[in-house]
Length: 335
Ligand SMILES: Cc1cc2nc3c(=O)[nH]c(=O)nc-3n(C[C@H](O)[C@H](O)[C@H](O)COP(=O)(O)OP(=O)(O)OC[C@H]3O[C@@H](n4cnc5c(N)ncnc54)[C@H](O)[C@@H]3O)c2cc1C
Image 1 (cartoon, rainbow, N blue to C red):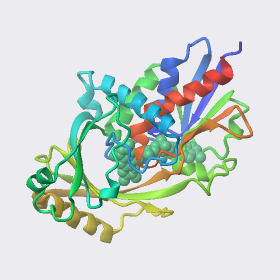
Image 2 (image 1 turned 90 degrees about the vertical axis):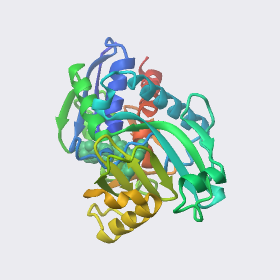
Image 3 (image 1 turned 60 degrees about the vertical axis):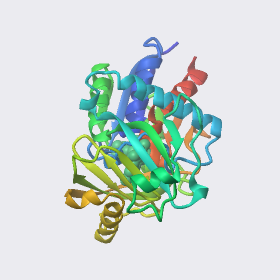
Image 4 (image 1 turned 45 degrees about the horizontal axis):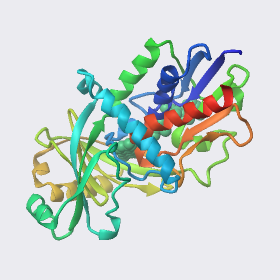
């Protein structure tokens, strides 16, 4: 059989992990070459704005439960293995204790319970009162979660380096349409995130929407655990802390809004008063690729095109498991 030339369009966390997974799982006698083509790379991708919390958030809520569970488990296994590497802190991976607080009991839905997923237990009202006296009136329900932070601005350079050392090619270029690559490649994988809306031959703008996220980074090295309280969150990184955030549907504005920055600051300081001494680094904005269902499938009209986008606020969390779904599609078509 003729060996495949594969193009992945998009060099964010989804495209790069898809490239690595192909290198890892598909035999070299099936693949001649894998090329990632992207107009932007880290530090200018959506993932670079994110804290890289490994936990589902705004994650394509209508995706079939079984598929989401498989993707989550495969992704958590990936991070479980990666953190065994003694150098993992250098590429932005650390364990994180997270307090997840809710003002409304209806929102306290534990993600799929499985001992292959992050450890989660419900917090008691007494625990919330003791741990968060400044906000205990407002937030009376919550979970304690043991998970990871995988900082994309450190993780992506590591993953790209690995992809390159394993003979993966990376080309900086804007792609107008996926079909335009068919002269050169046998299989095209679309990992363009929210910009899939702009591709000439991807008609998905009814379903794929931006969920604009604005965050602020501060220096506060004394903060060592994460908090999510409804829409506000405080997530420590290796050298900074991310304060967030917004989820504004259908908003494509990449400029930080000073009013939103002030709102984030006030709310996060209320949740964690010691933040008042933190030094601000800057404000950042990213457009989450929000879709009711993840789009990981063969194109309806062309079975030489596979889509892998629509991960909303969970692209880092779901990256590896999504890549494995793509591998399964490739195997079903070409093996
Ligand atoms: C504020 C914020 C906080 C977040 N926090 C978290 C979190 O804590 N945990 C988590 O798991 N997720 C989080 N997310 C979500 C996560 O960042 C995204 O789901 C993820 O980055 C999407 O990755 P992607 O590779 O699909 O898209 P992108 O990172 O947007 O990458 C798409 C790539 O495709 C390229 N591209 C697009 N169109 C073309 C074209 N026509 N030609 C060539 N190249 C093209 C782009 O240049 C880019 O490199 C957050 C997002 C935001 C905005």
